[in-house]
Length: 227
Image 1 (spheres, rainbow, N blue to C red):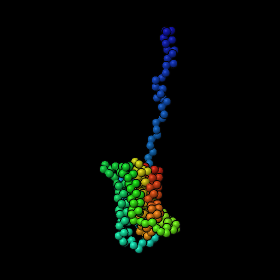
Image 2: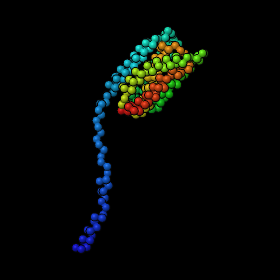
Image 3: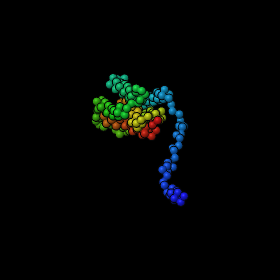
Image 4: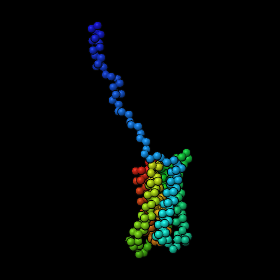
């Protein structure tokens, strides 16, 4: 009996093999239900279409208020503007329209689109513009920049509002692509009323919406774009 008590006296010194289970952190709390329900794909597409039509109408109204240029109907002016508008629409379809099995456009395609918009714009500017002599006055540059800001305000705001929580992956890249395309639409609007063909003016004052749209779109996508 004494030997049995001696054997049991050290049992409390044996470490508990399940002690690490007690030290585990508590389970994570259950995920909260989003306060705002997610839209279905058809509803999201309808909302994007309506926003696009409102943005286009705003650009046309703003251009009408500024006053259409006298040579707007000439092929040298109308054809480049029509090509730019068509490329803007096709680019938006590429960036927003789901591919096979409902997957969005890949990051490589978005990066190529973001690069193609400013490169194509600059190439067109070099091909169709000249270097003014004497240089264009500063106030004319500033006037077109102010017009670009006024024209682009509504399309950029609509895109940021409609496309929030819409991107399953690469939200910054997708936002940048859509912002650059919105900027291209603004460039087309500027071309309907600005008659200056100075290369510096076109590249800087008219190209500003593309660069600003890409940067603002990337920021909006990174902050509010992920679904």
